[in-house]
Amino acid sequence: MIVILFKKFSAIVLVGFLAFTLLIGSAVSAQEMVEDEPAAIVNGEEVSVLELDEFIGTEQVVMQIFQTNQEFGQLLLQTEAGRDLLNEYRKMKFDEFLTYYLLNREVEEKGIEMTDEDKDEFFEDHLELVMAQNNMNEQELLQVLQQQGIQSLDEYKEMFLDMNEQDMLIFALQEETVGTIEITEEDMQEFYDENQSQFEVEAGSEVSHIILDNEEDAEAALERLNAGEDFAELAREVSTGPSADAGGELGLVNEGTQFDETFKEAALSLEAGEISGIVETDFGFHIIKVNEIVEAGLRDFSEVRDEIEAILLDRERQVVWQEYVEELMENAEVENKL
Image (cartoon, rainbow, N blue to C red; front, side, top):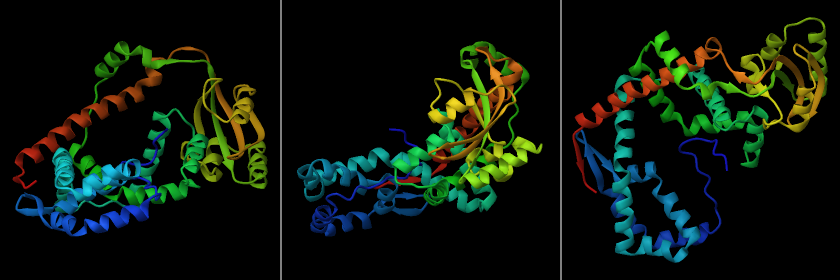
Protein backbone atom coordinates (compact mmCIF):
# COMPACT_ATOMS: atom_id res chain seq x y z
CA MET A 1 0.00 0.00 0.00
CA ILE A 2 1.32 3.43 -0.92
CA VAL A 3 1.60 5.67 2.11
CA ILE A 4 1.10 9.19 0.85
CA LEU A 5 -0.26 11.13 3.76
CA PHE A 6 2.04 12.53 6.37
CA LYS A 7 4.40 11.58 9.12
CA LYS A 8 1.99 11.79 12.01
CA PHE A 9 -1.33 11.05 10.33
CA SER A 10 -2.95 7.77 11.32
CA ALA A 11 -6.50 6.57 10.71
CA ILE A 12 -7.71 4.78 13.85
CA VAL A 13 -10.21 2.06 13.01
CA LEU A 14 -13.08 2.26 15.44
CA VAL A 15 -13.96 -1.44 15.44
CA GLY A 16 -13.93 -2.56 19.03
CA PHE A 17 -13.57 1.00 20.27
CA LEU A 18 -16.32 0.69 22.88
CA ALA A 19 -14.77 -2.42 24.42
CA PHE A 20 -11.38 -0.74 24.38
CA THR A 21 -12.83 2.34 26.11
CA LEU A 22 -14.33 0.19 28.84
CA LEU A 23 -11.01 -1.55 29.34
CA ILE A 24 -9.21 1.77 29.47
CA GLY A 25 -11.71 2.91 32.08
CA SER A 26 -10.63 0.13 34.41
CA ALA A 27 -7.04 1.34 34.21
CA VAL A 28 -7.66 5.11 34.22
CA SER A 29 -6.43 5.85 37.72
CA ALA A 30 -3.14 4.02 37.20
CA GLN A 31 -2.60 5.66 33.80
CA GLU A 32 -3.35 9.14 35.13
CA MET A 33 -0.78 8.62 37.87
CA VAL A 34 1.81 7.74 35.21
CA GLU A 35 0.90 10.68 32.98
CA ASP A 36 1.16 13.11 35.90
CA GLU A 37 4.72 12.01 36.49
CA PRO A 38 7.55 13.71 34.60
CA ALA A 39 9.17 11.77 31.78
CA ALA A 40 12.21 14.07 31.98
CA ILE A 41 13.49 17.47 32.96
CA VAL A 42 14.94 19.18 29.90
CA ASN A 43 16.89 22.40 30.31
CA GLY A 44 15.08 22.97 33.62
CA GLU A 45 11.59 22.36 32.19
CA GLU A 46 9.48 19.39 33.24
CA VAL A 47 8.18 17.20 30.42
CA SER A 48 5.26 14.94 31.30
CA VAL A 49 4.74 11.33 30.28
CA LEU A 50 1.54 12.53 28.58
CA GLU A 51 3.55 14.80 26.25
CA LEU A 52 5.83 11.91 25.40
CA ASP A 53 2.90 9.54 24.84
CA GLU A 54 1.16 12.00 22.52
CA PHE A 55 4.27 12.28 20.39
CA ILE A 56 5.11 8.55 20.16
CA GLY A 57 1.46 7.48 19.80
CA THR A 58 1.32 5.13 22.79
CA GLU A 59 -2.48 5.05 22.81
CA GLN A 60 -2.62 4.21 19.10
CA VAL A 61 -0.09 1.42 19.59
CA VAL A 62 -2.15 -0.10 22.41
CA MET A 63 -5.33 0.29 20.36
CA GLN A 64 -3.81 -1.61 17.45
CA ILE A 65 -2.60 -4.37 19.74
CA PHE A 66 -6.00 -4.58 21.41
CA GLN A 67 -7.75 -4.94 18.05
CA THR A 68 -5.42 -7.79 17.11
CA ASN A 69 -5.34 -9.55 20.48
CA GLN A 70 -7.66 -8.33 23.22
CA GLU A 71 -6.09 -10.53 25.89
CA PHE A 72 -2.62 -9.14 25.24
CA GLY A 73 -4.01 -5.60 25.19
CA GLN A 74 -5.64 -6.24 28.55
CA LEU A 75 -2.33 -7.46 29.99
CA LEU A 76 -0.60 -4.29 28.79
CA LEU A 77 -3.10 -2.05 30.54
CA GLN A 78 -4.00 -3.98 33.66
CA THR A 79 -0.76 -5.60 34.84
CA GLU A 80 2.42 -4.15 36.22
CA ALA A 81 4.46 -6.17 33.72
CA GLY A 82 2.39 -4.71 30.87
CA ARG A 83 2.85 -1.16 32.10
CA ASP A 84 6.58 -1.83 32.46
CA LEU A 85 6.64 -2.95 28.82
CA LEU A 86 4.91 0.27 27.75
CA ASN A 87 7.50 2.21 29.69
CA GLU A 88 10.26 0.36 27.83
CA TYR A 89 8.64 1.55 24.63
CA ARG A 90 8.77 5.11 25.96
CA LYS A 91 12.46 4.70 26.77
CA MET A 92 13.16 3.38 23.29
CA LYS A 93 11.44 6.38 21.65
CA PHE A 94 12.72 9.03 24.08
CA ASP A 95 15.65 10.33 21.99
CA GLU A 96 13.34 10.80 19.01
CA PHE A 97 10.93 12.75 21.21
CA LEU A 98 13.77 14.77 22.75
CA THR A 99 14.98 15.87 19.32
CA TYR A 100 11.49 17.01 18.37
CA TYR A 101 11.03 18.75 21.73
CA LEU A 102 14.30 20.68 21.44
CA LEU A 103 13.58 21.72 17.87
CA ASN A 104 10.18 23.05 18.88
CA ARG A 105 11.81 25.06 21.65
CA GLU A 106 14.20 26.49 19.05
CA VAL A 107 11.23 27.44 16.88
CA GLU A 108 9.63 29.28 19.80
CA GLU A 109 12.82 31.05 20.87
CA LYS A 110 13.63 32.20 17.34
CA GLY A 111 10.02 33.27 16.63
CA ILE A 112 9.81 31.14 13.49
CA GLU A 113 6.53 31.61 11.56
CA MET A 114 5.17 30.57 8.17
CA THR A 115 3.03 32.68 5.86
CA ASP A 116 0.15 31.26 3.81
CA GLU A 117 2.44 31.42 0.79
CA ASP A 118 5.07 29.38 2.65
CA LYS A 119 2.45 26.76 3.51
CA ASP A 120 1.23 26.57 -0.08
CA GLU A 121 4.78 26.05 -1.30
CA PHE A 122 5.41 23.41 1.35
CA PHE A 123 2.30 21.49 0.28
CA GLU A 124 3.13 21.71 -3.42
CA ASP A 125 6.64 20.40 -2.73
CA HIS A 126 5.08 17.56 -0.75
CA LEU A 127 2.79 16.62 -3.66
CA GLU A 128 5.67 16.63 -6.13
CA LEU A 129 7.77 14.47 -3.82
CA VAL A 130 4.94 11.97 -3.28
CA MET A 131 4.34 11.60 -7.02
CA ALA A 132 8.04 11.28 -7.79
CA GLN A 133 8.73 8.73 -5.03
CA ASN A 134 5.75 6.57 -6.00
CA ASN A 135 6.13 7.01 -9.77
CA MET A 136 2.59 8.33 -10.07
CA ASN A 137 0.88 11.21 -11.78
CA GLU A 138 -1.71 13.56 -10.34
CA GLN A 139 -4.58 11.37 -11.52
CA GLU A 140 -3.20 8.33 -9.72
CA LEU A 141 -2.52 10.41 -6.63
CA LEU A 142 -6.13 11.56 -6.50
CA GLN A 143 -7.32 7.99 -7.03
CA VAL A 144 -5.25 6.72 -4.08
CA LEU A 145 -6.52 9.59 -1.91
CA GLN A 146 -10.10 8.68 -2.77
CA GLN A 147 -9.41 5.08 -1.80
CA GLN A 148 -8.38 6.44 1.61
CA GLY A 149 -11.61 8.41 1.93
CA ILE A 150 -10.19 11.80 0.88
CA GLN A 151 -12.27 13.16 -1.96
CA SER A 152 -10.19 16.08 -3.26
CA LEU A 153 -6.76 17.65 -3.17
CA ASP A 154 -8.22 20.62 -1.31
CA GLU A 155 -9.46 18.30 1.43
CA TYR A 156 -6.08 16.57 1.51
CA LYS A 157 -4.28 19.92 1.71
CA GLU A 158 -6.38 21.06 4.68
CA MET A 159 -5.67 17.81 6.54
CA PHE A 160 -2.00 17.85 5.66
CA LEU A 161 -1.41 21.42 6.83
CA ASP A 162 -3.33 20.84 10.04
CA MET A 163 -1.50 17.62 10.93
CA ASN A 164 1.93 18.96 10.01
CA GLU A 165 1.88 22.47 11.46
CA GLN A 166 4.80 21.87 13.82
CA ASP A 167 6.76 19.95 11.22
CA MET A 168 6.44 22.89 8.82
CA LEU A 169 7.79 25.26 11.46
CA ILE A 170 10.74 22.93 12.05
CA PHE A 171 11.30 22.88 8.29
CA ALA A 172 11.36 26.70 8.33
CA LEU A 173 13.91 26.51 11.14
CA GLN A 174 15.96 24.15 9.01
CA GLU A 175 15.84 26.56 6.08
CA GLU A 176 17.06 29.39 8.30
CA THR A 177 19.77 27.25 9.89
CA VAL A 178 21.20 25.69 6.75
CA GLY A 179 21.36 28.93 4.78
CA THR A 180 23.00 29.09 1.35
CA ILE A 181 25.06 26.17 0.01
CA GLU A 182 26.92 26.23 -3.30
CA ILE A 183 27.66 23.15 -5.42
CA THR A 184 30.52 23.34 -7.92
CA GLU A 185 30.33 22.28 -11.56
CA GLU A 186 33.11 19.79 -10.86
CA ASP A 187 31.05 18.11 -8.13
CA MET A 188 28.03 17.84 -10.42
CA GLN A 189 30.04 16.45 -13.33
CA GLU A 190 31.66 13.87 -11.04
CA PHE A 191 28.26 12.75 -9.77
CA TYR A 192 26.99 12.43 -13.35
CA ASP A 193 30.00 10.36 -14.42
CA GLU A 194 29.67 8.00 -11.45
CA ASN A 195 25.89 7.56 -11.57
CA GLN A 196 24.97 7.41 -15.24
CA SER A 197 22.52 4.56 -14.75
CA GLN A 198 20.26 7.04 -12.95
CA PHE A 199 19.99 9.13 -16.09
CA GLU A 200 19.05 6.47 -18.63
CA VAL A 201 15.57 6.98 -20.11
CA GLU A 202 13.07 4.79 -21.93
CA ALA A 203 11.42 5.84 -25.16
CA GLY A 204 8.14 7.73 -24.83
CA SER A 205 6.47 11.10 -25.07
CA GLU A 206 6.99 14.14 -22.86
CA VAL A 207 3.48 15.46 -22.33
CA SER A 208 1.56 18.31 -20.74
CA HIS A 209 -2.15 18.55 -20.13
CA ILE A 210 -4.94 20.84 -19.08
CA ILE A 211 -7.55 19.15 -16.89
CA LEU A 212 -10.97 20.62 -16.18
CA ASP A 213 -13.99 19.45 -14.22
CA ASN A 214 -16.56 19.67 -17.00
CA GLU A 215 -16.71 19.37 -20.77
CA GLU A 216 -17.98 22.90 -21.30
CA ASP A 217 -14.90 24.44 -19.69
CA ALA A 218 -12.68 22.03 -21.61
CA GLU A 219 -14.29 23.09 -24.92
CA ALA A 220 -13.73 26.75 -24.04
CA ALA A 221 -10.07 26.05 -23.28
CA LEU A 222 -9.64 24.12 -26.55
CA GLU A 223 -11.12 27.04 -28.50
CA ARG A 224 -8.57 29.37 -26.91
CA LEU A 225 -5.73 27.00 -27.86
CA ASN A 226 -7.01 26.76 -31.43
CA ALA A 227 -7.06 30.55 -31.51
CA GLY A 228 -3.32 30.56 -30.78
CA GLU A 229 -2.97 30.94 -27.00
CA ASP A 230 0.10 29.41 -25.36
CA PHE A 231 -0.59 25.96 -23.88
CA ALA A 232 1.56 26.38 -20.76
CA GLU A 233 0.15 29.81 -19.93
CA LEU A 234 -3.42 28.58 -20.37
CA ALA A 235 -2.69 25.56 -18.17
CA ARG A 236 -1.46 27.88 -15.41
CA GLU A 237 -4.63 29.94 -15.75
CA VAL A 238 -7.40 27.35 -16.01
CA SER A 239 -6.17 23.81 -15.27
CA THR A 240 -7.50 22.36 -12.01
CA GLY A 241 -4.71 19.82 -11.41
CA PRO A 242 -1.52 20.23 -9.34
CA SER A 243 0.54 20.34 -12.55
CA ALA A 244 -1.01 23.72 -13.41
CA ASP A 245 1.82 25.68 -11.76
CA ALA A 246 4.29 23.84 -14.02
CA GLY A 247 2.35 24.77 -17.15
CA GLY A 248 0.63 21.39 -17.18
CA GLU A 249 3.83 19.36 -17.54
CA LEU A 250 3.40 15.69 -16.56
CA GLY A 251 6.69 14.21 -17.75
CA LEU A 252 7.31 11.05 -19.72
CA VAL A 253 4.46 8.81 -20.85
CA ASN A 254 5.07 5.38 -22.38
CA GLU A 255 3.50 1.92 -22.27
CA GLY A 256 5.12 1.22 -18.90
CA THR A 257 4.00 4.35 -17.03
CA GLN A 258 0.95 4.10 -14.77
CA PHE A 259 -1.34 6.62 -16.40
CA ASP A 260 -5.04 6.16 -17.03
CA GLU A 261 -5.27 3.89 -20.10
CA THR A 262 -7.56 6.24 -22.00
CA PHE A 263 -5.24 9.17 -21.28
CA LYS A 264 -2.15 7.15 -22.20
CA GLU A 265 -3.63 5.89 -25.47
CA ALA A 266 -4.53 9.43 -26.51
CA ALA A 267 -1.12 10.84 -25.53
CA LEU A 268 0.87 8.18 -27.38
CA SER A 269 -1.15 8.69 -30.57
CA LEU A 270 0.04 12.30 -30.89
CA GLU A 271 3.05 13.65 -32.77
CA ALA A 272 5.52 16.12 -31.28
CA GLY A 273 3.86 19.51 -30.88
CA GLU A 274 0.39 18.11 -31.53
CA ILE A 275 -2.57 18.93 -29.25
CA SER A 276 -5.39 16.47 -28.68
CA GLY A 277 -9.11 17.03 -28.61
CA ILE A 278 -10.97 16.61 -25.34
CA VAL A 279 -10.14 13.33 -23.64
CA GLU A 280 -12.53 12.22 -20.89
CA THR A 281 -11.32 10.01 -18.03
CA ASP A 282 -12.57 9.29 -14.52
CA PHE A 283 -10.48 12.24 -13.35
CA GLY A 284 -11.94 14.91 -15.61
CA PHE A 285 -11.69 16.35 -19.12
CA HIS A 286 -8.16 16.61 -20.51
CA ILE A 287 -6.48 18.44 -23.35
CA ILE A 288 -3.11 16.81 -24.03
CA LYS A 289 -0.03 18.20 -25.74
CA VAL A 290 3.08 16.22 -26.69
CA ASN A 291 6.09 18.44 -26.13
CA GLU A 292 8.70 15.99 -27.38
CA ILE A 293 9.13 12.43 -28.61
CA VAL A 294 11.90 10.89 -26.50
CA GLU A 295 14.26 8.19 -27.75
CA ALA A 296 15.78 5.68 -25.34
CA GLY A 297 19.29 6.52 -24.16
CA LEU A 298 21.43 8.48 -21.71
CA ARG A 299 20.35 12.02 -20.93
CA ASP A 300 23.03 14.66 -21.50
CA PHE A 301 24.71 16.28 -18.50
CA SER A 302 23.28 19.66 -19.51
CA GLU A 303 19.79 18.20 -19.37
CA VAL A 304 20.16 16.73 -15.86
CA ARG A 305 22.47 19.34 -14.35
CA ASP A 306 19.73 20.96 -12.28
CA GLU A 307 18.57 17.57 -10.99
CA ILE A 308 22.10 16.71 -9.90
CA GLU A 309 22.53 20.08 -8.24
CA ALA A 310 19.32 19.46 -6.26
CA ILE A 311 20.55 16.01 -5.17
CA LEU A 312 23.90 17.35 -3.99
CA LEU A 313 22.32 20.38 -2.33
CA ASP A 314 19.99 18.13 -0.39
CA ARG A 315 22.90 15.93 0.66
CA GLU A 316 24.91 18.90 1.94
CA ARG A 317 21.87 20.40 3.64
CA GLN A 318 21.32 17.18 5.54
CA VAL A 319 24.93 17.20 6.76
CA VAL A 320 24.64 20.78 8.07
CA TRP A 321 21.24 20.12 9.64
CA GLN A 322 22.38 16.90 11.31
CA GLU A 323 25.33 18.71 12.87
CA TYR A 324 22.95 21.40 14.17
CA VAL A 325 20.60 18.82 15.71
CA GLU A 326 23.48 16.87 17.27
CA GLU A 327 24.79 20.08 18.84
CA LEU A 328 21.34 20.79 20.30
CA MET A 329 21.22 17.30 21.81
CA GLU A 330 24.77 17.50 23.20
CA ASN A 331 24.18 20.89 24.84
CA ALA A 332 20.81 19.99 26.36
CA GLU A 333 20.65 19.31 30.09
CA VAL A 334 18.47 16.22 30.32
CA GLU A 335 17.39 14.30 33.40
CA ASN A 336 15.55 11.19 32.18
CA LYS A 337 12.89 10.10 34.71
CA LEU A 338 11.60 7.04 32.89
